Image (cartoon, rainbow, N blue to C red; front, top):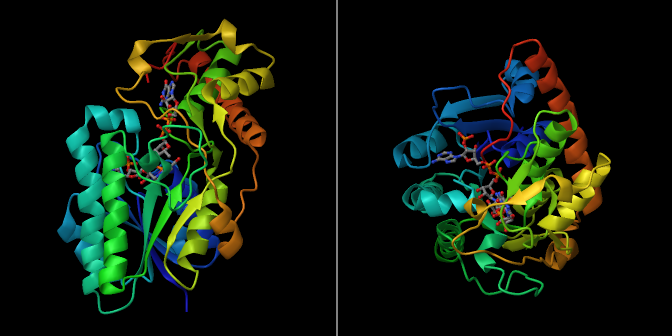
Length: 344
Ligand code: NAP
Ligand code: F7E
């Protein structure tokens, strides 16, 4: 019989890649969607058209801030695995909307864990933990035993969710998994995260739709991998014999500046001719350096990243060149208003 998975945050970047993976593995997938005034399923629309007619993919309105809706949903669909991907996941925004970010990041996981604890069947739970929990105070390689020094409301809420998952594992025997994922990107990355902001701008600059790119700290270092590789790791953690904490990372760290250099070079341009910085994009408390050590996942899960940093930058640039070309055609046909630089 097919396994049943529930994914919160199915409309996000990881939601797209994980849904695709689980459907390919013949799971029956249910996902939660927030009601909004515009349709917000763009990322998963291709999967909806491919799989919805044979009932392998079902969407439900829910919000992490509504525990009773989550509880009823879990009782109704009786999933084998729950992947809690939903979060207000933008670190800079979490300083501006700290209450919403923290409530979503803490009340959400706790509500789901309570429903899992009280369910009649054994349900496995995946918590989307984050390398932001480490705080990045030096260039040390970080693993499952490294200390948490959260530096934002986002990171603090992730520490709570991580620890409450461990508490439910130890106290009630819940199969609770913490995936401590370092930054992972893709052509489906939200456009206000730095990598996608850069590759969108490169496409738009190349097609004459934008003249400059305004960023914040160019000297921040991140361990950037490809989201498609990381969702495989999530599934491997959930299908390992014992629940645990797992770091997924590439083991390489690069600066925002390096990302810019490679990205602009891919289209024959020099980033220094286009990039300016503004205080607007600096954070009240910066995570300067993140570098992960994925050796536990490699040893026990057999997980390894398959996409190099250079390949990641190139695949995002190539995808956003195509998008900018389509955008240009729409503008030329008066079907889209030109915007000369995104304010994000
Ligand atoms: P994302 O693209 O920002 O997607 C977040 C998802 O959460 C979206 O579907 C969003 O819905 C949903 N959401 C936000 N607030 C919600 C609420 N109150 N109730 C229900 N749903 C809500 O994030 P991602 O990059 O896919 O990341 C997935 C998870 O991994 C997140 O928890 C993130 O914090 C964590 N994480 C990400 C990374 C990374 O590098 N990508 C690294 C470590 C951990 P809308 O589409 O309606 O906004
Ligand atoms: O910033 C710097 C910024 O917003 C990366 C989330 O998925 O990964 C992500 O969090 C770096 C920071 O990602 C701009 O200051 C410079 O040092 O792309 P980001 P993040 O904060 O690392 C972790 C693991 C998560 O868990 C989160 O959910 O880039 N930076 N200039 C900029 N960042 C942004 N967004 N915009 C700029 O203009």
